[in-house]
Length: 337
Image 1 (cartoon, rainbow, N blue to C red):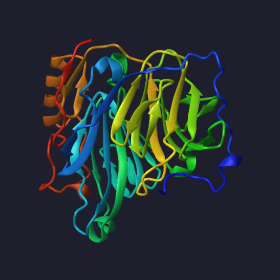
Image 2: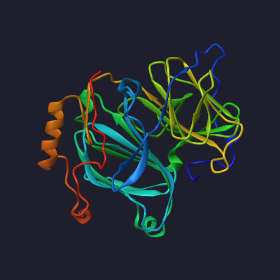
Image 3: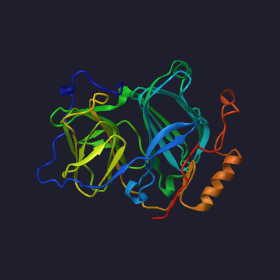
Image 4: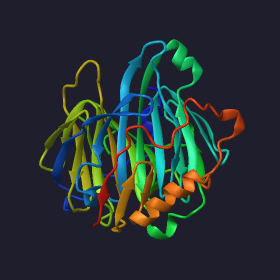
């Protein structure tokens, strides 16, 4: 796994173990992610939406892409499409994607790097495998997270952040058995490089067999653990979780994840995303690539898109055979909390 790493984990700053009297968050739900087809036809596992939106708030969607070994000619992506009202965070563990958007942002996302795109008032973008990956094939593994914006920020100007793998903050668990890659937010006094509108924490943790990861967690944040590979347990009660499952944690001050002592040969470590944020607690209306607070705002987004108000595709990037107005297979869901 070429995500950000270190030659000697014992040289990294340690995340102190929570105090013995700390209230650890128990697991309240375990969700096995169903599969969907996205973009030009690539398969993703999507643990949410599909649960009570209040449990995931401020997060809207999590897509787990791979891990998959593409044969030559198989790699697919998501051609030009619009977004409004939220942020997309694409984290690549293995493989590569090329991103371009109507603000001029973009570049190659590969092997441990993150693309953080604030759609805000509106943007057009694409996410496609580079030509060499299509031609040769290869391993591809990544995740895309949608982060909601509160009502007063849905009209903020679009913004693009390129977070290279060497900018990710590397930390160690208290016993040196887990490597923590802090992408955004705070953990044990450390801050990830991602600049967020909505207060969140987002990290990728690799646990050696039998290792335990514990950390204090902001009481005003929710908390979730999604398993990218391997298996183990979550919570003080030791609830079993495995690849493709999401553990939603309840209230408390600290979180705990532990890797099983024996892992499969194809996945020798337990890899998890640890994420949480401060709930926004506003009405949410999904319509494909738009996430707003009301139906009228969704209708306005559609009208603005067709009127060309969400941005313009750079002339050198236009491929009329691939431009479409909706994210293929995108979820349509309404929630009023």
